[in-house]
Image (cartoon, one colour):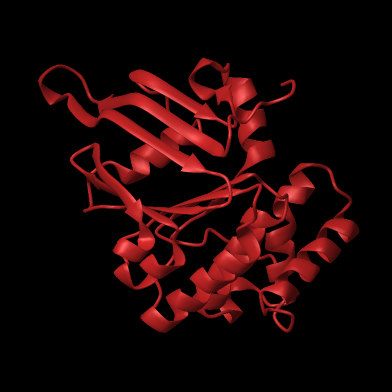
Amino acid sequence: MGETVVEGRVAVRLHGLKKSFGSGAARMEVLHGVELEARLGEILLLVGPSGCGKTTLLTLVAGLLDADGGSIQVFGQDVERMPAAAKTDFRRDNIGFVFQQYNLIPTLTAAENTAVPLLIRCVPRKEAVRRAAALLERIGLERRTHAVPAELSGGEQQRVAVARALIAEPRLVICDEPTASLDGETGEHVMAAIRAQALTETRCLIVVTHDSRIFRFGDRIARMLDGRILSVEKASAA
């Protein structure tokens, strides 16, 4: 891919971003010229009602969908202009994902689930699992490394999912409703783990959430409605 250039502290820059689904009379415009920046060293919370375009926006940033208009720059790279294979490589090397439903492989242990991104990169299995177990220890799961998902609580499964997203040291971590399936206390523990283990000066986190109880873990809040960013403010103002 060549050397990437990051302009200042900007990790992600969206300009005039548009996306529609369907065609003809059934065509629905989901994003209407979105303008947004996410910075290195911050947790940017993306909030808004269901159906306002939050998940679509994340999917475009990750290069899983093509935009209809506008531009997407991630670490100085124009994602929209990348060929499909280059997008896949860029996503593998730079982006980690935390999903609402955990998406753990039921037959693998916590350490093995965490190690999957390393195994995809051809890291030897023993080394990959060792590194995964060390990361799980840092987020308080040292006694659960050999447990399969069915033996873990919801909060423990989500922390494994966080560890899996971080194990390959991505520069951008995308979290889609990471606390939606958790009670308030457990959700706060998960967000505390995310902030403590994921946030660095050279990494950016974008978190979609409806959960106002975790707003305090963010640095800025981007409020979204009907496919547009209405405002971006410091999280302390929420």
